[in-house]
Image 1 (cartoon, rainbow, N blue to C red):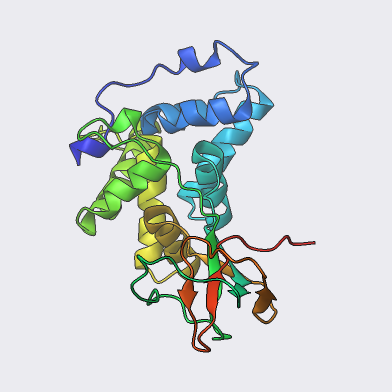
Image 2 (image 1 turned 180 degrees about the vertical axis):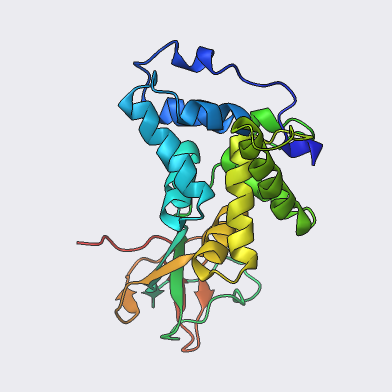
Length: 259
């Protein structure tokens, strides 16, 4: 559990040095605080209203409110991109007066002209390569990376982290002994989300799925029948073949304009 704890505490006073920083920047700073520093800062009246709002967001995450956890993840790491696949009707060009090159051997197996079920698939999915997570370097990990890493450990770990956070709060309120380890704020938030998922909370399970595996591909299908265009060119283009009617043909690899 040492990997998810705070070995070097972040000074509370240092966080108040610049009260003009944006909410997102302060949220990122708070996520890297120790849970002990967070609990102390949460009730410190020297913070601004904006900063107090960030503390309230983290507390809502610890109360296992799904909307708060999702907001924290999105504000810290950005919203997940949704992969989109667009399917267009196929466009076939027929060349009744053209001949194939002598080097032509056979028709491409992947092309079946006349088959109305064939569509050209254009993937607009954009994926950003995430930097590799460094072992034992939790302070450099984002909340999403912390969640991904923690999910690969024993299912007992999230509860152990939350229990340690509770012991820390009792210690700060002078109602208990000091904790053996002090967790980072982002570790506590990730642990609560995993506990919710283990408790059969579907929204939490969905959130973990999306953050660990990425969102599912959404398919947009442009309705319409395949288009056949006759060309009187005498030279067949590269990639042409003899279709089922014995006519030289080719399939377009560029979707028609969406007007």
